[in-house]
Image (cartoon, rainbow, N blue to C red; front, side, top):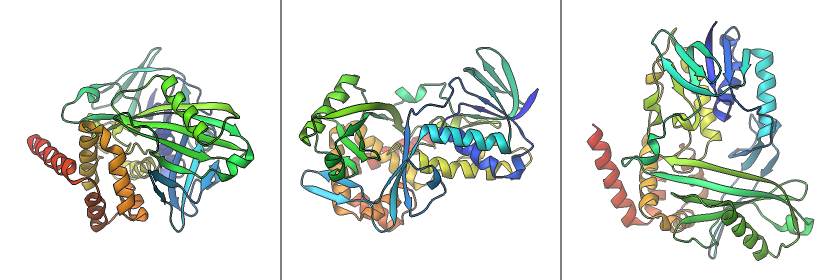
Length: 386
């Protein structure tokens, strides 16, 4: 049997593309296969994002915050202004919802297996698993098979790695604890390190120790920092209810160059994760809508021409270059950025919807020397590719 579409992996990007398909009758008669080795039923991660007031995913929200703070030294700034709200969706809710909606609206089949290879023969795509072989007209791949991005001199790699505790604490502490987007008041150890704090419902708080650095830590190192942070807030009596751990590659490596006529790499495997921040949810929503629009343009659309870059890609390259060569500057960079720039402008900048004037102001707020050096270095690298 030949499928119209095969999805390799059922992560965030696959779910969002499938959700967009489920709303469009163009896809109702398409035969779709989803290959995923895991059950995807667990509460194994969270996705957070900001948007103005009400949004399309509000019915799934587990928590939301109307203020979130940036802290560094004496600086304390609320980065959420006017009607901007920070929102959280938990994985088990999103898994269940998308599974249900595509079961109703789309012709999908599931295979619990691991994919070992994907090959485009021009006429069709062959997907080989550890148990069988499948054929499709188009494949959406969310799995990174080639690690060439990890040791690439042209595109430095910084890892956004973290470990977080969901802890239950006394209500008197929970009530006074604000949402903190970045708290740089922790030892930097020559890296870029901060705490991320989200007070949730039922006296629960997510406290996450996050680094932007090349090297990962042992679990006990993250957890030791979390313990110290709780103690610094005079919180000694707490219960760890669950943990969250992850590592997101922050790199400007052009994953989309691995796209073929019939294979589209999506999610992190396709460069959908914003290189300079590791943000995934908002950007993946935009990309998912672009995918379903693209598929309807022609009878046999060519995925090699799907991706397009903007000036924000160049900005990402510069920041990654700076953090790669001078990782200890992260605290200074973000502190100057938030202290000297309008918070709403920064959020628009991170959402890639800012004006050029806003971008100049934000960049000018950063330390001049390392950014000017990185600017010319990135410019030279890009020129060499031409």
